Image (cartoon, rainbow, N blue to C red; front, side, top):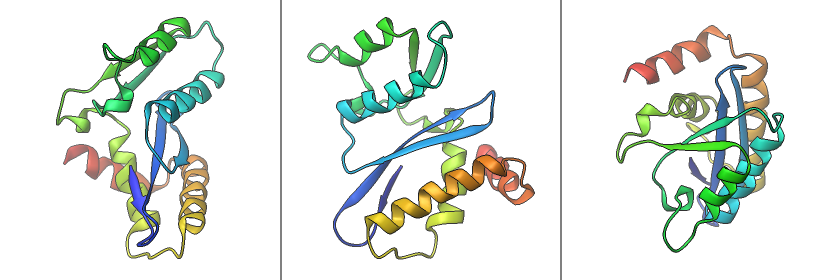
Length: 150
C-alpha cells in the first residue's frame, strides 16, 4: 500500500495478515525495494518459532521476486523455512490482505490531509493497533466483507 502526504513523496506500507490470529502487522518505509521487503520478512519470521513453516503471499512487484540477477529473496526463504507464494499478475484480490487495505483507507486515510509523513505514519500505526484489538468490530467486518466480495 502507498500513502502520501501531498508533499515530500510517498511512504510504503509493508503489511502482513496472520490468518490464524486475525492480526495485522505493518512497517512504513520511505522506499520499497528488495532490502526493505527482506527486512519485513525477517521481522515476520521472528514472530514464530523457526520450526513453523511460514507462507507469505506476495504480489509480483519486483522487490518481492527472486530473479536470475538477485537470488536474495529465494535464498533467504529457503534458509528460513518460509514459502513465498506469488499471486498471478493483476490478481492481487486473491491475497486476503487486500480487503484489509480497504478498511485501513476508510478508517485512516479517506478525507484526510496529514501535515507530514510522521503524522500519517502515526495514524496508520494507531489504526493497526485499534484493528487488532477490535478485529470483531461489526463496521470493520462489514467493510472487509464487502471488499472481499468486490
